[in-house]
Image 1 (tube, each protein chain N blue to C red):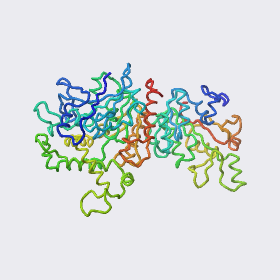
Image 2: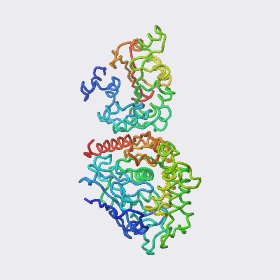
Image 3: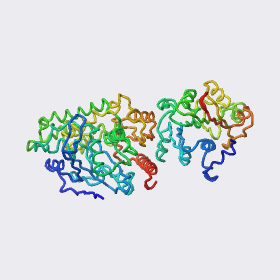
Image 4: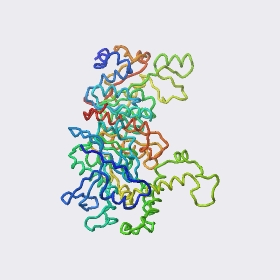
Length: 403
Length: 221
């Protein structure tokens, strides 16, 4: 089986734009390249070709090829779920969830995670080189959608010789992809674990994304998206502001208060300036500045756009239940009480549609004050539910998965 | 079929059956393997687990988040929801049986809920505590206070049970909305069925709970 290549990253410290942009075309990941004969048919009408998908795998595919799980990553996530990140040197973003003995148990399941189309960690996106011009795509890159991302993943699955997924798992934008998988390829998905997500992006969420995009575009270094052509500056300030705003939406009032309150940062008294006097300011600034080291500004524009366009019901005459009619996939839907970005009401609407389609669905709302980000954190009740759902589905699938 | 035939349940040992509520064992005995079942107000999922073990495709709705999460953590297909507001989302004839076990008295609109059960399911199985039970009557008559029993320990001010009825009341409701009573039982305090050939007034006095298998009036079944 394919082994995992995880490079302990070179000396840490500020990561150069070169180092990251190298990752966009030549990632420290497995690569599936699709030539002119296999274009990716995008919703915008363009055939993207050639293109490539960077992915990581964990665990082993069984002889019957029935134990494959695709993990779909969130907006600013990537394929490095459970290995050291090649750019940041940090642990994988879901190591608490994926690994031996974890809910997504690599002793039992073959886990695949690919960088989404439009991303910047090795799958073709605006930060990649456009082979037609030899230059970075930038805004020449076609606008992509969540269904495009999933279509690309299905092509990767074909390439790997896997017909049916045991499960598709994702939170936030990853959850959108998981739901799109079930709507587009119901017969290829045995079960789906959709966490803190929705079947459509709400007006409020589109509004926050627009705020982020405008922050990027307002940075003079963005230069109409052509910053890669210049030797120097990247729109780091704009992207950092976008990240800061977005990060607030991932938390909750209660979590921010618990973590920071009104405490001061390394000082007793206010400085009567616009320094980061408060811990929460300092924290946000750090979130912004560390994000820009690993993420491409244009990629952020494209991926937020893809989420904005997402609306499964819209593709089915406005009737969500139509998208899941007659579906055999086993669903588990999870939401978190303090998540105001993808509130429980969104999950409940999904569950009602699944009920109306007579789908087999479990739905749990987890009590936590940690906001949307709870799906990335160690929340025992959430892990118990995920583990039990997969074990029960595995039993139905005939997997010997410890159930 | 007599209750003696229904209990004990095939495939459940006497030892194991002690873990289950009497009405659950009775219900499980009524449902054929391969049936599609919705358990409304499924609590911790005990009945669903019993059903799944017997090859029945069970789903559940439960109001309390804790109950739901315990069910889902057992791998059961249970969603958080409210019998009063969420049954409308299910299509007609989606299930062979819809079960409402010890939940009717906690709904805001028992009549509407009952109508929905028989819209969603071809049959419905309803169990409820009988407020006509002699000990209940005695507590009110002699004690002069709202009845409390081992199975219904809550005081009047903190009980979730807002619509108590007697077996006689329930039979009247079924008549009123044109529901056909296929079969019925009264269970004693230990969850054991009372003898079948007793008159209604006896059940209403000595049944601690009522169990009804219902179908739509005029259905061929």
